[in-house]
Length: 497
Image 1 (spheres, rainbow, N blue to C red):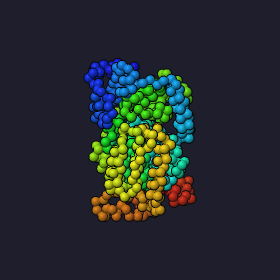
Image 2: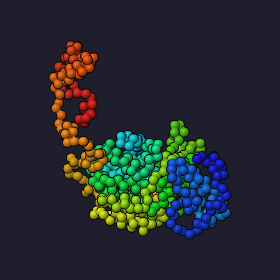
Image 3: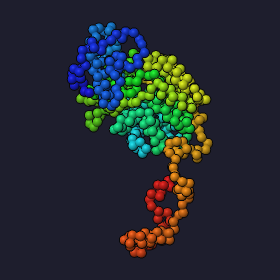
């Protein structure tokens, strides 16, 4: 949706009295779409696009109907950012852009990988040495991407000595979108499986750090691959979380005319969990979430802020809709986890309270014999990484240190994709078929090749072109002085490698 066409959307909503409620009392929000704006949670990608438009349109209408600043403060509204605050935000974002994002691009950190098992093309970044025994994955939330956590990944790598991977989920960032709308737990887990196989990261158990949506996928992956995950860190995620907070992003089908406009709507108190939102930290991370103008429209940080004609949209599939597990399904996912696990929430988070934290810890402890702990991070809201980035980094590092001994494997010869349930074992109808397929094969001699060609020529009635009798002297000399390996097909060397 473009704000120039907002009137057309507003006409569809009807009078504001139809959906206005009294929101003076603080209560647990089960569905912000339904309770605040009388909108149902979408059931498919098309509905997610429409809901994204209507959420913003209704938020604007509600703000316009508010009579006083007191009412806006009490109920939450879309409030314009004061000039002095925007100047500070702009400066913070400029520093972030130059220090992290630009330098990352110059170093060529961002790479792409085609996953043969799922058909997805994912963007990822690696911080640390290739081939390191201690590997960590940071999995982002809905509406974010791996770039949102480059700074955190770099610090974990430098302070802990880990190699950290930040991956863009399907439908997010610069990864490909699913045309069929396959955005469910099995699909995301399959992407991570294929990613690990493609990069040969299964020789040692890995650690997973997940935010929101990423926490659900991390827990599901750890439950399915007990021998592949050494540690799990879940941040702001629990079985009774608001479905509409994870299923889709409220701005996934909205285009903003300027960065300031986008930030104004992102940190508006009308949305849940925004009462304590840190504007400076928010705008830093928002830069990585946006699909910035391409080509000559932007040539540097300052022009990024002053480009009035630029359009900003979140880097997410407009039809994205994650099939959120039910509360019971999520509990079963947590119960299947057998590795070390840590669960963190913001002390002042309205998204996840202390009881939710204890429920997650209890589910993880039910069948696990490993270290399970839960902590509330002081002076932090739902947006823990924005409010207390240094504290969260230290908490995560502590969790990784607990898991580190389980990452070390003395003999990893048996850690094959088949053994780790990353690839299915080959199946054969009979024992004879298995022996025939798996037994060592005899290397054919020159006579064997000539006999096979002769037999083939006889079967084809003499129509097979066999150049062995008509080789030139030059070809014969090359064969005479070439090694045996030189006579192999080029694909042979790929197989050996």
